[in-house]
Image (cartoon, rainbow, N blue to C red; front, top):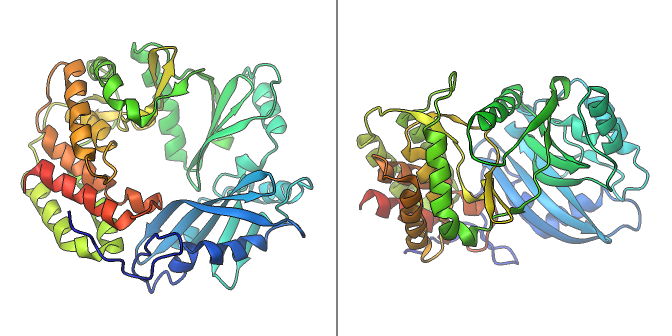
Length: 420
């Protein structure tokens, strides 16, 4: 494996910086913890100090914009802050009730965050503090008020059981909250909300044991309400262990005919791979030639149209819960019609993070997955290579240490799968 050089001075924590971007001149400051600590402290109440800052996610569009998510500690409490610049701001889907959300967030006197929404002139970035999100104004409503709104719609929420908690938050896109006996899922985009609703219907049609059950929805808030499932997330380290059962469950899904699903195709998978390759090449320019070559080979060897099955669309270990030894599959939002190989390739590629030995471990899990599935779908290596290229920028997005080397490691895995 080669060692791509850093293209800008490394940060104090040893992480490299991507090349500078004239269209996004703030990029390096957004990734500099000391610089961002000073920016974020300007949102805090007097005498409230920012004690720790960690970069959690980097959503970057080269030549266009960026959104960076931070986890910070103020006193004993942890908070999420998001800074956005460039086209990311213009693409926010601002809802009609945004002013109300801002007012509600500003009115929380018990918070150390006195300015949950600011435009930092020096940095040239919009800074928001969770739960305020201009694209998801429903999050800024106090949880008791939100639960009352749900109950008034005739949707059962259960008895009061302490404070809610955030299970997932993807700035500008969606959030998942657990409160009382329900899980609330909020969407920024109407299309995503409708896909989420459709996913519950699909889960109900497939006999896979315990799974997500819809209680109801509030379309004006783009909010779904589902029953809680008491289980533990399956850690990545168990991917090989659970693969045979996961494969059998996947076969049951693929064998279920469901009408009116959107069809996928090798062309759409190739477009996903191209976006991943473009970002990988932008942040690690040494990989640009290899990424172009891989894409050319994927396009040259793209499989012919094949029979389509009911595919999960985002099948990976993070979608599973362990319910006292039984497995439950979550999140059917991206279910579509696709070649059978797609889901198996998605499960496998998700296990490759650019570390030594990742591909060998992922292949072992794939063999176990195929064993549970019952057969090896056609063109599986092509789909796996394409999925790996889609995943290639993930070490940068997650701000991992040695991310340039890990991006290169995923590209090398794709090359090996496709055959050098």
